[in-house]
Length: 264
Image (cartoon, rainbow, N blue to C red; front, top):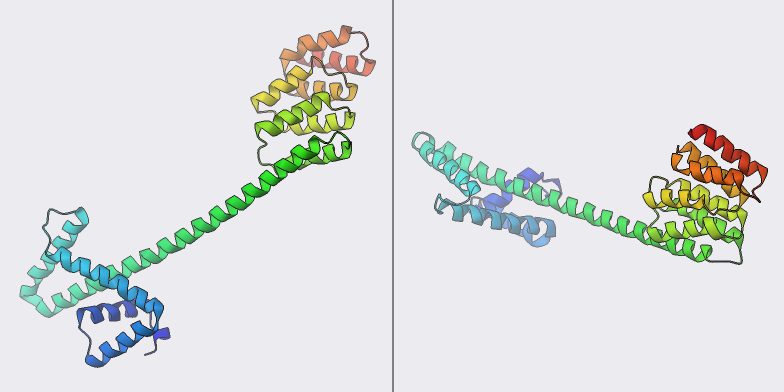
């Protein structure tokens, strides 16, 4: 019987009987050769030896031990009582009990190893994702600070979509860009990016505050539409101010009138 064709259960039984000295001389020699020549079998043999040694110790232990020890002791006591009527069968049951318990421990050890490997892989993947997100963040901040290229600033804003949840540093930079960038297009893209995070209190407050000093007509109209859509009645006063201010173009005033009508 070749080692490669051994089923795990049969291998566990063979090793258990080898440790207990229950094999023939030929089988003992054959098993010893397996252990010496196969690292996997050797590993299982060493684990089984530790397990079975603990079984021998627990057989002589006080029944005031742990619940698992007491359960094992009660099982052993039941087996000992059964010896009176059926000694051969009892010995077989005790041997089977050792084999089954040892096999279970090996299976659980294998499952534990698999879980540990899975956790390790997941942690590696998480670390990789976090590293990539940090690189994206640094690139966004660098490009947003590039005062010479509006296209790069727009590209940086679009890159924030790759961030699962922009941190405070990125959000504050987007708010500053919406309020102060010299390019109307960059301001609009910033506003659009911020609108996706409207549920964040700091973003909502910044959008409402921007109504008070925003001078870019294109951004003013888009901002009014966004806040009216969100039913922000708190801006009614700001909309009324827009309708009476000098220097505000008609399109913005018309949007302010429509906003007042919808919110009242």
